[in-house]
Length: 110
Ligand SMILES: [Zn+2]
Image 1 (spheres, rainbow, N blue to C red):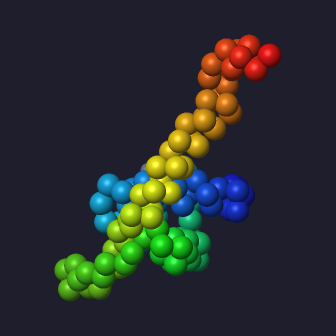
Image 2 (cartoon, rainbow, N blue to C red):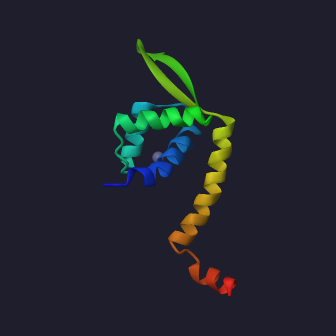
């Protein structure tokens, strides 16, 4: 079982990433996260979406789909900014944690 707090950052970045491609909604993003092995219940997913909205990274766009109300979320400019910062940091983290080019880096540090 994944530690929820530890992976919440990954999940938030993942949500912002998909929101940057187009509007998202809860069930869709739950399916997408599940595909990546993050199985979130509604008790985690919806508070996370609300938090991203409260922090100004997502905005709600309610719509009616086949006669039913659905809450879509779209990314804000602030969300795009934080996502681009996160991308740079993820790149660094991946290189270091997966030890890509680790030998070169260590030589450079000496
Ligand atoms: Zn994905």
